[in-house]
Length: 220
Image 1 (tube, one colour):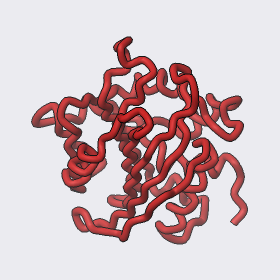
Image 2 (cartoon, one colour):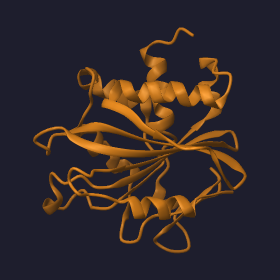
Image 3 (cartoon, rainbow, N blue to C red):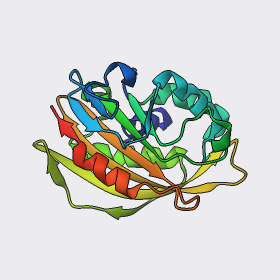
């Protein structure tokens, strides 16, 4: 299959981007519950974590340094990828005491299936493989370290893998090793991608929170 850089970025978007929706407009019941009936998803964010307004994601994008030569075309890359629909993070971004501290983060990304129809992937497995390759193009030293057997949530088959990459940021003096847990599924005509970032190198670990988040996911 002949696929160019722009198509790879579109596939990377299955893991890194989605439809721009303000998550605070979809939170109901209490501060920890996210429900979006239109997109068919419910989950609980970790206690004491906060939802980040998607409009504030621009600052995060500007401060992250992309790998593999993509920093020079950062604006074009982010435009191709779009924004997550929801971001839950441990530490507020605007407090000086957290400057240079990696905040464990969960992002939810949803891509309509029709957006990838022209890529001629014959099944979800091919979409995931190409998405993984796209992510490896923009995250420095990205590699998958563990894959899990598929499992069911709300009648949909989920695929999960653990990976790691080097995170570069204007407030961090040297590249930081980050661990990433990714959950993927398809539902209601969408590809769903849940990405859970943490850093053992900074002792910013959220394994317990990620496990509880995973247990709370419901597709509706």
